Image (cartoon, rainbow, N blue to C red):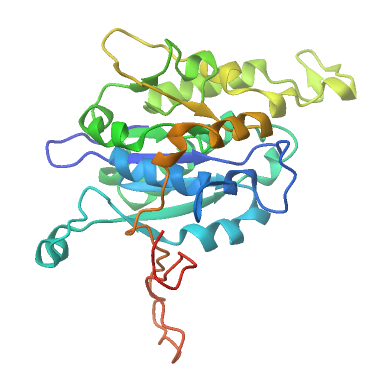
Amino acid sequence: MEGKNNIRSFHLAGIIPIGDRPRDFNFQWHDSLMPVGRNYTALENAVQECAMAGCETIWIVSHMDMQPLIRERIGDWIYDPVTVVSDYRKRAKEIREIPVYYVPVHPNDKDRRDCLSWSALYGVLSAFLVCAKISKWVIPDKYYISFPYGMIDLEVVRKSRSLITSKRNFYFKYDGNTVKDGSYLSFTIGGDDYLELRKKFREESINSYRDGGIYVPVDEQYNARYFTVKDVFKHLKQGKKDNYVDLDWYYYIGDWESYCNFLGSPERSHFVRREDFTYNEWNPIGEDNEEGSEVGPRDNTGDEDGEF
């Protein structure tokens, strides 16, 4: 499941899994849309992180009913922040657009194995299948999995870009822990890692019947929907040759108490909406835009003066 590596291209696909079970926020919108800054949500921060990491495509895995609102916030593509420069002449030559794709959770997975870990694996599979139908040359070489519920310094992500976009697996580490230990820290995997994780996931999943046709009680069926990040990614085989970057700080915001702890921290000031992070849509094919409804970059700041 890996693309053809060559010296000219390296396709790093960003996977953002949010097709999981509801958390304790209990709002009408998706839990990943909780604000972490002024007009800036946790999901948008994860998208920005993927762009900082050097992803060439970004794949957001969510339930179908939440996709319209999510797409309303994110759009069809974002700018690569590393290629955006202040000089207009240079900007026109160097700026790069990163497409964002929206992957619905499979209907057969809903209420059966729709946990965050499986959403990540399903995102990897979807990215591979779509790219493989286009050309073998665009199949992702690595997959960068970013969780909206893990807050880290994006400048560290940008500085680690060369390590992330390499043939070796990459892990962010905080206080000696990685995603293997249950921390919502970003990492990369390859096709072989995906196959091994999927195998372990299936082995530990319980459906209606066990091996041998033994019926499973209702309260024990489909245990995979409750799998945690650690339950699945503990099977990753980390090696000394893998790339690691230690973080000075990290915050988990997957529940209300942890979210409040993050909002009260001094690191909250790091999370502001970038000026180049605007809503963008691709122009429709074969259609003329109606007068007064031009499709293109849209100001999403909500402020008349344009400040964030």
